[in-house]
Each structure stands twice: as C-alpha cells, then as structure tokens.
Length: 142
Length: 142
Image (cartoon, rainbow over all chains, first blue to last red; front, side, top):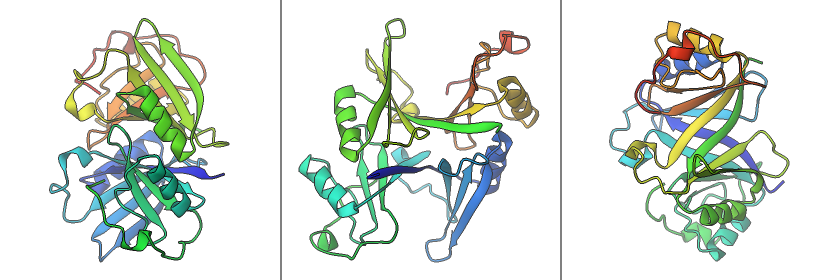
C-alpha cells in the first residue's frame, strides 16, 4: 500500500467542550499529546474498535484567532505514504505545489484544487533529510 | 458498535480536476452516484484496500457559489449510528441542536462546537418515520 488514510483534523477552541461533544457521539479518546514548546494539545478520538478512523482535535493553548480565516474550522485530511520524497516528486511533476516540503523527511502539506489542506506523512520512521527537499522553501499556507 | 466512521466529504468545483488530483495521491474511485434530480454527482475515493476510509467528493452540476462561504471547501465528517433516533434524542438531551432532524429515519446533521458539520446516517436501512422527528423543522444550515 502506497498510501493510507490516517485522520481528519479539526481545530477546536474549547478542548473540554469538544471532547464532551464527540464523546456524546460515542467516540473515545485514544491518544493525547501535549506540546509545551508548541503550546498545543492533540487529542485523537475514534469510534470504539475502529482504530484507523481518527478524528484529530487540535487545541492551541493561546487560541487560534490569528489563523487565516479559511483554515478554521476544518483543518486537513491526512494520509501516510510509503516514500514521501517519491510522492512529492511525483506530485510536483504533475504541477502540484508542495506548500510545505518534506525537509524533515517526514511531513509535507499540499492543497487540493479546492484549497483543502492535505497532510502527507512518511510511513514508519522519517527518511534521511536530503536535497532538494532540505533547502526547499515553504509556499503560501496550508 | 454504536457509531462507525464513514467518510470525510469535500466539495469540488471541477470534478475531473479533483479526481485527477486524488488519483495522483494514489486514491482510487470506488463508487459514483449521479443524481439527475438533485443535479449533483458523488464520487467516493479511497486508498487501495482501505475500504472504510472514503473521501467523498461532492460535485454540484450548477456550481455551488451560492453556498454559505463557511461551507466551502470542507463539507462534513460522516458517521453511521445504530439507531439514529436514539442518537439524536440523546444529543438533544445534552443540548446539541439537531440542525437537520432525521425526518426520513435515515439522515441527520449537527454541528460541532466549532461549527464543523457532522452527518449522522442510520446503519443498514432507514427506520420507520415517526414523531417527533417527522414534523421537526430544520434549524440553521449545516
């Protein structure tokens, strides 16, 4: 499998309120990550027994009012790929802009024709950082 | 299982362009539905072998410029539930507005605290239409 769906991410303004809401629906919290440095919390929630259908809640501790208006409330759709360099090269060959190049061998962002943000993640561990990715600049926002 | 993730829906302005884009990523078209009466086409695409991770492309034949600006480009997240009446009643008991009540015993829409549209679908076949749902009015948009 060259590509696998991972999650759909939404940004939330009130984490407790949102967790309560999705619990009402029957989703369970499966994973949580607090980033002191990034000042954000990620909470993954999914239906019981459905381990490959995560909803990722992103909560920014300092709020996210400064985000571009089109990035709320929906965040992105995420897929993991077999080789993120091959995938990005192939996309570029087909005139897709890599908004956030995989400089770290791990993560890239692109936009769909309708401006939907799509996250690409390297399966398993990050690849060795190499050119041309290493020095490739960001384009726009995602 | 009381709830199961179904798909994430995005609206697309150019169906061919979007299908080509998602095919670049490695997704395959798995199902398509044309509605002459509704004047729309739905195309489901998923990673090969990953049958429960559909991206649903909604293409309105007459365009969708008249849609509320906050409904583009992301559409909704969809879950199917064991009993849509029980789910909606439980949500209402917990102060969640049912924007589109399940009058047809089959489909409802709600909003997350951050205004993300969430579709609820009855598992298997539709339930018998009954009150109070049958005469419940829509609230807002979704």
